[in-house]
Amino acid sequence: MKCVLVLLPLLAACASAASPATAPAPASGPAGLEAQVRRIIRAAAGDTAEVAVAFVDLQTGDSLLVDAHTPMHAASTMKVPVMMELFRRAEAGEISMDDRVPVRNAFVSIADGGTYALAPGDDSDGELYARVGGDATVRELVERMITRSSNLATNLLIAHAEPTRIAVLMERIGARGMHVLRGVEDIAAFRAGMNNSTTAHALMRVMRAAQDPAVVGASAAREMQAILGRQQFTEMIPAGLPPGTRVANKTGNITRIAHDAAIVYPPGRAPYVLVVMTRGFADAAAAARVGADVSRAVWAHVTR
Image (tube, rainbow, N blue to C red; front, top):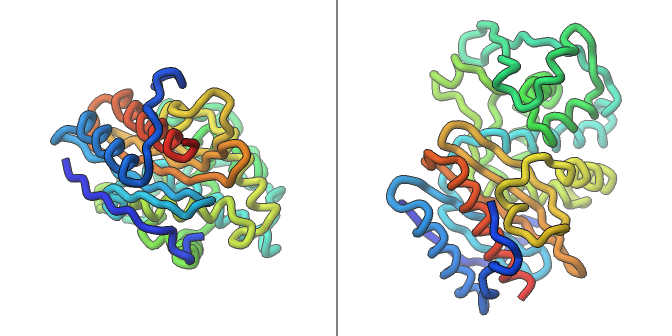
């Protein structure tokens, strides 16, 4: 298990779980948080799994990086940049979120130009497949892509967001480790090594930008936070927070990959951004527990 941790101030350019009664004692400062995160990772990951963490407190500027520049498969976390680019284009008047998109289940591989289809049984949002042949608004598809992690909605939206435009946006916000190349289940591309990837640091930048009106516009920032706040998968970072805590998050899970990226809103202060990425856990529940445990430690540190 590789673990390298760095503590640094927030760069100016960057703008399941135990109950609260069993939460860890608050870390006395950055060094205390570092020690807690190290212990959590060491105990859970051993020598067979990897955990990357990126945290930034948007009030104090404190940040914490643990293996945060290690590239990993992005899984469904890549859906947040897709959403951001669509809202950016809507803010610019290039598209409307009420534009209607034909619902189809036939896509072109970026690797060999062949066509492929998604399997409804492998999608966490199977309902959308019943509407093939009809249409849906961009807004509805974004909601499904984020809150239900719909693969079909994602593939329908990729063409509108355009990976080349997403890359420009990622460069602009300083998320250079986030690479969105394609939609979901493009097996030919997967075999060719053409995969969506990210680092924890880049994903932290994405989530930071998604809530920043100066980056995405006030209305887009409000709407994206609201969509992320309706997330239906809450087994990682939200599971480590006190009940009722406001959180806006996006998970990503494939075989031996489990990630979560969240904006957390403690009452009476600015939010913080936390990203936990894992690779190599055979047990998905164990990976989720790591996310919850890190989340619990960070919450205790921030609210001490």
